[in-house]
Image 1 (cartoon, helix red, strand yellow):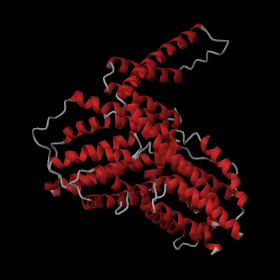
Image 2 (cartoon, rainbow, N blue to C red; image 1 turned 60 degrees about the vertical axis):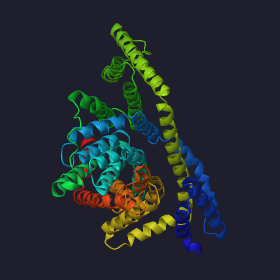
Image 3 (cartoon, rainbow, N blue to C red; image 1 turned 135 degrees about the vertical axis):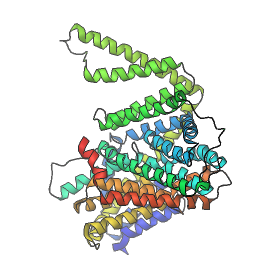
Image 4 (tube, helix red, strand yellow; image 1 turned 90 degrees about the vertical axis):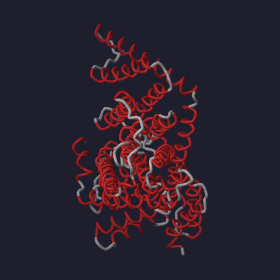
Length: 516
């Protein structure tokens, strides 16, 4: 029994989670229990747990992961201030007269929300509460409407700034460095979040294109499933469309553009996004619109001007023009700060900020507690010889590097039924990805494949997490079987997307190589 203790440990973890124990406590508790069991049986050196302190310090000082709560806050403010609801309503009325038009609008809004938030659960629930009843009232088939809403909500897994991609970038970078060490390369290269954001952008748009193509074809072949909206539905004017669509698009451009352009780190860009969503919420909640627009313009101006003409007031050799520039920057910052103050005050008055902060703290605590617990689990798993077992298993897999990758993708897909993406990312991936990289697979391409794989498992019956999110938010007349039937075609589209990226790796690797 002692020689199989690592496998028993992994099985015990899945059983504990399925029994409903809190995930972080299950992971840490199983790890500690098997550490002492292994020490008792003489197959593990208990002093390995002494490295846990270094892992905790590494986590709390990790500059990449600090971006997670800020991106979560962005999404929470967009949801709680009803900006997402207004966007969905406007887009629905814009495309409603087309056959399948409501479905097209839901996919496009899902993509915009994914690029604004990166949070799957909140997006699925919000769209299930807002879009699904509207589609049903318009005469959409229950299964078709459920499938479109559920799938569009999971785009937050693959379209930047996805929380999954941030965690995945950190895990894959560590795996890449480990693989380089094992190859004898000691001047190692690291991978950045920006590279993974760039790599996932085209695959994410590819999936959106596949969804839209399917909806258009389905609407033409089976028009009864997706009728146009009622003719008396008021079509939005140009000003209304601009007011609903332009702010989220500008926010996306500011956040992703600053990361991909090398202007800001992911954490700095996430801070910009959080401030931007606060200003959008203030605009939505009735703060003087001229003040919000002036404050936004001031902050954008100071960001651009300070980058082009930096001023360091602590220097002693400054001339008059430098002092004038510093004074202009200070005035611009004050104007921006005043706009932020009034936006925050309106958010507090309407309790938007309370709900958003509660949601952010809950999700952030869950993610970081899981990562901390996974540090204990992985230390014990390595101490029990699990890492060598995984490497040997992959090396002996028929089909070489391709066979090993196929096995890992299937294994991760099945685990996605039972474990959340955070648990899979911080427990499973550190064990398998170094071996896959050593076999010759590109780490960025590999990360994108894994991200889409996890997104697909989120959709797959009977245990997909997104199915449960939608079940909780859907009207009573929508049965669980309707949701299962609705996502089936989209799972096939996901498989087509994975196959295209597997066959043409440039879809994932071209943009990061061009930018970085």
